[in-house]
Length: 636
Image (tube, rainbow, N blue to C red; front, side, top):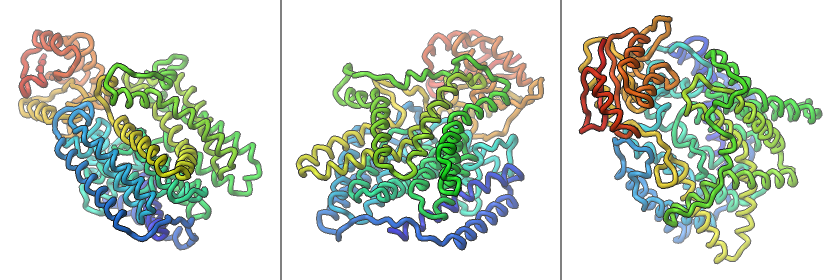
């Protein structure tokens, strides 16, 4: 076990160094052949210097286990068969159609299989099975790759933008501008692609799901083990926490990558007992800060103040705690202000960010649907209340028990709550309306992730007491937590049911056909006003291959990407107001072209009305796939 931990720690250290150093090299120079070589050389050199200078024994960690028996082998066999069936059901549902939720096409039987799997894992924990952490990682990976299997063409919007950008950097060496954020993930994926020859798409697809499935279980277990919990309590708590509905670890984006680094840096920081572990902690934080600042700032603050606390400055506890609190309260709002000023869009005193903080505390007892949906949304609608109450109890417990280093987490959480309130007073007017709340939701996720270790301690205590009960009573709790396990998996992903509509459709094969048709039938420069799905289809098919220069010198991509750009605002005018020729001419004037297309998808709420209006305004139109998407052509 300890040998495996050492290998995992060393691998993670190297990846963190490669991510951070690669980002700096790219920012200062490029990621062409020479840039990749320099990044690798520096990363390998620093890695071996650290290994040579700090050859300290890692925190010892072991799992209580007993030899394999027929019962254990039977449970492992059932576990593997069940996961095989889960993957089979997912492959069976895999589609190129446009979806709001993966659950639209997945058989309900998959939830029964996942329910049984948690019971099987509980049985393996009870029987003290060897390599139980490995089986937990397998289960975690199966959960995290659901959208990878279901969405054949890819999932999300940001994913495609980042992948197209990385493909361009990989080909040309750099892309302007070079903001420091995103570069941690970009550099890691591109360098791994160039040295391993594994397709960039595959590395990008699996980076966060795979790292999360490998490292979160082992680090959660180590954290609980170091704090005196038994193997059983630690492992069952870790298994349950794998299903928490954070909505992060199934998709690779710079923000999600930074969230993962934040969680891992905190967990390793809390168990750190020697310099090599503190170096790993700070390396993860540095990689996080160059991937996405919203997660990177608290990660770096925790690492810096953890080191300060261990130094001779640690005697100034009150001063250190005060500086940490002030920093956590102000640095993210300051970063938002700087970003807003760069976009000439800073507005104060207006709550235009699209998110009311009180919406976070939206409670209810749903009773208008079947028992299954009612049960799911009983937990979903009261999840914030459950989280806040659990966190209060967990903080009280950790303070009472004087758990090492958790006071820093509590101060950091308090500071981020102030940061959230301050940030809610800022306007993110450089973004479209429905994206303005995303930044605040990311701070909330920061708070939840930083609370993760404290919550682990609380639930490990609960499971510890459950193991003291009679076996018949334990079975009741296993069934209860298995039910929660399945519910959390369901609400972790986008949903489209009678209680909730996540709204965002995925890219479909029809979107790809649409952009191909437009490209093949256009003999001159053109722009397209389309939704996100059709726009990313163009990005997936053609990359960042077509820009125009506006009259004021601004470069404009010919599809509405990013969604905060002017072309997307014209698209919203077409679908939210009226699909008029005047709007299309304004868009053509902006890009200085004479041809423009307007794409209207069948799922748009006012589709019949918009369709007839657009037909009257356009020069010509074309229906794709029996009218799933209509293409309207406008010329001067």
